[in-house]
Length: 339
Image (cartoon, rainbow, N blue to C red):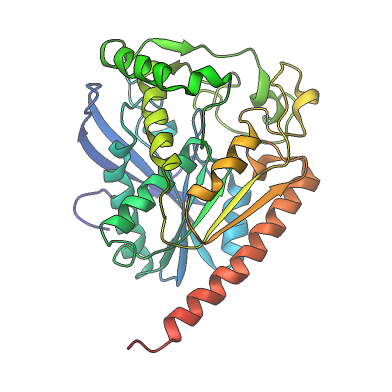
């Protein structure tokens, strides 16, 4: 801990702790910003750690995922980004940003806190959906600045990353992108997609068709409204990825093997990705870097670790297999003499 942040305090999840990261004024004009770093357990020295990022209409609640990493010897941390989940303050638009680089400050601070908390653990970044795009671009910027080693970043895990815009092809044309940029300058908070009735969320929450418990104010069933400013930020980030980048570390990309149309009926969307087009993930996954392992999980949901029991078990098997290789490579690199 440094003097810039308060102490760890008990989190809303039993057995977890949280620390607030103060960020100062919002560049998008919605007051002061905070992010929230969540830790499993009491902390302390560790050789390896993971820092997880959530997606849109999401926050960290998945204790099973944290337990799985802990079983592999990873200290587990997750961040609720500013205006998301634990971090959204009164008067702020949920998840709103006009530039994905605005997350860099809190991500760097999170890496610093994890390093101090663990005594310099090697950190594997992880991101789901929009968080997968955010953390991929962030890792590429760290590589460009020569900071992957100094920030202790050794790997990247992506869970159905948001690598392209789902929907008709016309949404991805240059004229449409130009129009979006122009609109974002003057109508950044205008809503382009309103919450749906039920849909994907009903296949997850235990009070409906799912088995997981979470805060429906922080993660509503039908999602938060999508604004022009946010989708423009996402499109610019995706355009950067489509030109090709390099996260500079071994990476695992998990996704479903097929997409399904989102409907209000949870039974109809229990198997398959009801949020993104998995063909787009497959198409652009090669732009992440040159040490990628890409695995489709049969019948997985959009969040592969929130799938039904069988595909969820398959996703964890693939994660464990990749972690075997990751940990082995980290051990070899630490024992290989330099020069």
